[in-house]
Length: 270
Image (cartoon, rainbow, N blue to C red):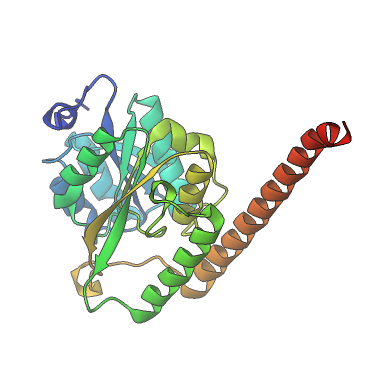
C-alpha cells in the first residue's frame, strides 16, 4: 500500500504521524466492501483483519486486497473483536504506522468523521481519541442502559476527577490509538470487553483522553447489519472484566499506600 496524504493534509509531520485504519470483521459480506471503499477517499492505508469469516465474506476481503484497497490480516479461527483489533495493532506497528483508527465493519460509524478524528490525533499524537456516540431514536434501549453502567464502572476504575483522563464512552469502537502506547497496555480481553479494558489501561499508563462526539447508527438486518454482540455472554464478559479491573485498582492503591507508609516510617521513627 502507499501512504495516504492524510498526514500532510492535516498539517502535521508525516514522518512522525503516519495513521492507518484498522477494521476488524467477522462475516460482514453485505457491508465490508462498501465500508472500505468509503474509507479510502479519506485515508488510503487500510488494514482489514478477517477474524475467521466464512467463504462469502472471505472472498470479498480477498477482492479488496487484490484491488489494492486493503492490507489483509487473516485469522483462521474466530477469536473475537478484541483479538482481531490486537492483530490489527500489531500489523500497524510492523508496517510502520504511528496511529490506528479503529472502525467497525458493519457501516454503523460515520466515515465522514475520519478527518475530525485524524485531526484530533494529529494535534495530540500521544492521546487516545475516543468517539462519543450520538444515537438515533431507534437505538435499542437495553444497549443504551448497559452503556451507562459501563461508563459508571470506568469512571470508578480511572478515578476520573479531571478532563484529561475522562472516558465519556468506553464501548464505542470508533477511536484512534497511538499504536505503541496501545500495544504496551496488553489488555487481556479478546471479545466485546476489549474496547473498555484497553481504554482504562491506557489511562492507567498515563495516556490522555480526547472525546469526540460522532453519529452512530444501528444498521437493520435487511441492509446487511450484523450484530455479533451476545447479550448474555458479552454482558457477562464485560461484567467480569470490570470486576477484574476494580480488583486490580484496589490492589494498586493498597500497594501504593503500603509502599508510601514504609518510606515514611524511618522519618517517623526519627
